[in-house]
Image 1 (tube, each protein chain N blue to C red):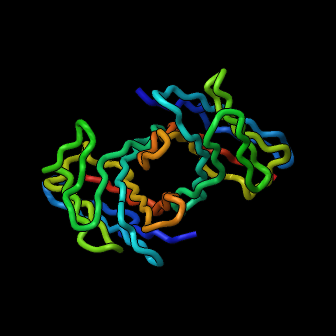
Image 2 (cartoon, chains in turn yellow, purple; image 1 turned 120 degrees about the vertical axis):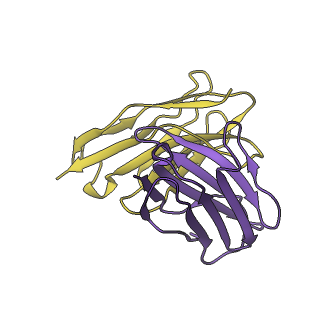
Length: 112
Length: 116
């Protein structure tokens, strides 16, 4: 079946630190991979995505590369800000389908 | 991006009562809406998919008589938890996708249900 496993949180960092949130997946077929972010009191928002192997998604300084050989899609940011504090969800869908399979979410807190 | 709004954002009810949660697309017509459930420290689990004007399609293991979903218009879907019990306490999230576009999903802010 299809599943997503994320790094367990919560993760607490200081401002300007380097961030990595690990995400690995299992899937039948050829999935598209996503990172969603949920800020306090808001709905999930698409942060970035990649639709095929070796694609790199990027947005707001965040990056993630679709690694088929390691079935991973780790989220990285070189220098985090307090405003990046949120819950981050890794997800996949099988191309053409709109059903998303989510990881459990990782709560990130950035301290000034 | 497009806006999806849920109401209420939190609700507390007594065991045995029914609770209705609304999901509205505010600035686009949502042909398809999805309802998810999230337990603490766990991932979002898809409960059902609803298309405007037709019956919802439920995921395996989700009781359709327990979780009634109605998608009567292109801007509104409702989830009714019937005869709620404490084990139904959870965070319920809807998402919607519209006609045309990229197929991107837009999420509501979620509704927290607590059954006493």
